[in-house]
Length: 465
Figure 1 (cartoon, rainbow, N blue to C red):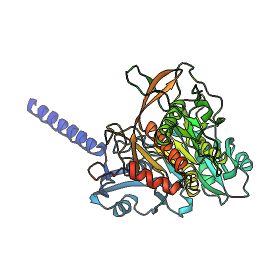
Figure 2 (spheres, rainbow, N blue to C red):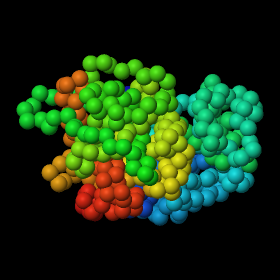
Figure 3 (tube, rainbow, N blue to C red):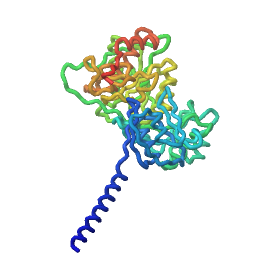
Figure 4 (cartoon, helix red, strand yellow):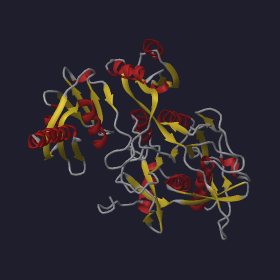
């Protein structure tokens, strides 16, 4: 009897162990690897969720992925090192899909059962890509909408239950705000399927750049010594400085500042230290002094897109660029950036570039090759920082980078020297050099670009990528 009991216990334990192993196999994590660099995909997925799979694809590739609302599917597939097209067919099964390349931005993947136009639900990627690159931080419950001529945003706002919190009427572009995530997504789907709508996109946050640090080192360069010349017959070169608020510079330097434009409301500044915008204005003036030998007609138009807020947005930056150009800016500097790829800001900067208005932007202060916007947009000159002739160890070295300029600048505020380091300073310095060259030589934008590329152009080698 004792032997029989032991045999019964052994059999029971064996059954429990087999059941446990079976449950472990059933709950083992699915494997998914999308190597965008080698254009190969590996997957081992059993009973996966369609939306979760699409989220992984969006995260790994950076594509904008849209799903037809209500479409679901259990994903089961196992393969190794397949091209993306073959991988998508196995992952999506009987569903239809369309991968639409976009020469001006991010490719779009539409997944649907009925028709492509019904794939309107945006599949948000994870906060970081599989490569570790940061992704754009969409502002919750906000959408940027561009309407076609004749469509009325007020009518759309009433229909969607939204508030119009920002306008660029000349572009039929508007910022809508909603009460919940559900209302935002429902509105996105309705807008995306309407013939009245040119585009609908997220509004991405752009963090406030860090301020300069006080320094006490010896042998620092003095404040810029500049004389403001009368405007030439064809008008002044005006640098539109899209940044934080700019404080008084002191001495005779304030005459180089035009009346500021505010996009985001009243600014809150520390009277005891320079804002980032003040440091960038000082950097522009130092470059002007260097290239013009101290005599120039160039002036700066400060455009504050931060106000008192810890961050701005792609919508406010786009509006700031439009206002700067409308008020005479012939060069734009954007010493700011984020991973957020916004179709409105991209379109605005492309239009500005087509008007032969050069745009300089900071490439970003991370030693990566992933794009930072707006620097990576077509038509924008991306500026990274160099140190002793090499790309600075902290600076972006992506293939979108065009120029390399020293990323350290000494500026003065209330007679105290401050040091600012980064691609922000490099971009502002490049904008100042470009403006000064055009002013001193009466050159065209094309001639200036040739000069800048010859003297500050960088070549990103495959090893650096």
